[in-house]
Image 1 (cartoon, rainbow, N blue to C red):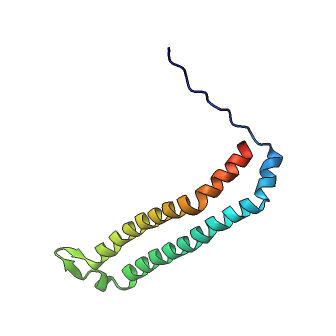
Image 2 (cartoon, rainbow, N blue to C red):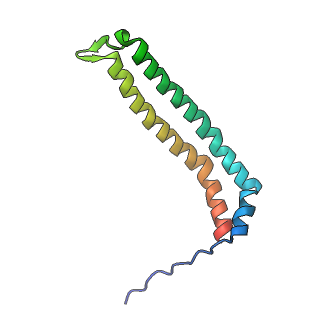
Image 3 (cartoon, rainbow, N blue to C red):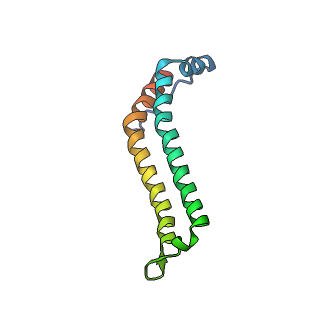
Length: 113
């Protein structure tokens, strides 16, 4: 006979406990850590995207300059947008695993027991 694993039931925090946690120093630190990464990275990516659009709009002759075969500067700028997106995602995962996940786990443990 096989024994099934024992699944520990999580405790459901009360609404008041959620409010108290939201006002706690540890939650404010978590939120601050998240914002200190997300806001600057979002602004940087948005600026990079706007530069791409403006250059494509106002320097279309330069963007159409061939680089390799039929591929021009505009194609490489467009590909750089994708590469930037993947790089930001990777950087965020590394940052979150190091700086956010431990704090989130501690808060979850405190709330759910």
